[in-house]
Length: 637
Ligand SMILES: Nc1ncnc2c1ncn2[C@@H]1O[C@H](COP(=O)(O)OP(=O)(O)OP(=O)(O)O)[C@@H](O)[C@H]1O
Image (cartoon, rainbow, N blue to C red):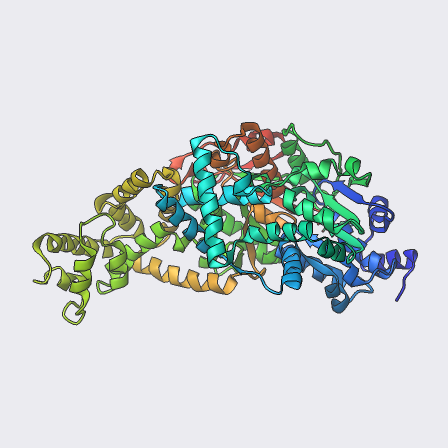
């Protein structure tokens, strides 16, 4: 049913959405491209959703002529739900509009035109292929080297640079070009694509086939893009081809551009007004956060030099100053945060309105463990990166499991040569073929089948494991690391692979913290099992306390936000700072921190433990920059 301008806004008002004048202008804008440029919480996504509804209900644009691009799949789902819940809209109508990420939109076009596309490589498969190519080129193929190569190839593709375009002079670049070429050949031979190929293929399809380009350019009358600050070259190039007959609406915030390492070009946002003679609307009210949180966020981002100055104010929502806690280590940090969350829930807060955010994946784990101990529901976004799947943690848990059950052969095989006991794997297989004779490790270590040298080693291992059963998990872990020699094994791994020592030891140091509350190894193992099923159940849902990295949190908001592990070396992250562009990297890290700060509506708690991963650490330098805007709470040791 057609609605008038007044009726549309009155209906929005009746469901509690009262847009301000600038937002209304953005919602109703017609005649030419529009860019909405504004700080966090100012209603950019709200405007985009209301504009989509307005276009359908007042301007009478058919839903299928509307394309809405979001940054993540989760954001696309959220957009679709929000749209469906607006007055006058329903699920069917909302779903008839095309809402998706760039990747999903491009894939759809490819499938419609080509019928099918090669099977996509999963991340893990892609890394395996690249590792093999590195090994064949005489490289080490370490996880870090492989990850770096994967990222570099992705970056090239996002900038539409294929191997043939690379003019390599330096040896390093010549080698990169060669492996990149081999990788592309491998995919062609095996009829596979990686994720970035979707974008490159869509670009080529539209660039090389005017018939297809015209067909798709005529399909949409309006294209709306959220989080435009993180658009890369290939996405922008396709967007331009798709929008020759459509009106573009872009919303974004240069201060929240956090994917430059993947080729995002914030200049597309900053120069859009001039280049396309677009209307620019700058929203200036932050509806999300209480005043003290806004003050803290501003104090932080004002330290960035390369940014468009923008002024925004809050809506005078009072609140407490953000709080800084400085626990002695990450175990105390986790206990302190879990206690606070427990109290909030007892006071009637809903767990899904609480988020624990961090810079790198592992950082939420200690808090997850504490919540699990208290049976507080949680949801992990990065389930693929589970702590207990880290190989180091897996090894150590296997030691514990074997200590509790000497016939756990899977655990035994996992750790038998970690540290190296010079036990021949083929020999091992033959000794283990008759498990009835060797019902457990104690028996195997006496078996006449086993030659003297390895038998001696196995006896030693059995004695050590027997000692472990009487220890607390903390003592047991120390024992495995120092006495049995697991740390030695990690050191040799670092020396052989050239991997970053800190990265290799990090999960082990964290495990030290995690085992602390448990009285026995068996208790700890029972906890691991319980946690595993809790994580499996929680995977992908958004019920319970939300755990995610700053990157994942972009676009979201929560009543209460905890930022954990805000320490030097992590915020900003050492690895990013050691990359080539010093100042740029620091500013990107600060933007990431800013994204974290600005997710909070009412309460913001930052935590900077004094000791992290077993070592004394300083607070994040970003905390000094906001020191005047936060209050400090000391907690006990
Ligand atoms: N006119 C308004 N009146 C009241 N609340 C509003 C108004 N506009 C937006 N909001 C609310 O402000 C919050 C932030 O809005 P939204 O998520 O759209 O901001 P954003 O600019 O996209 O944020 P960010 O860039 O930080 O992701 C939401 O809870 C939204 O409902």
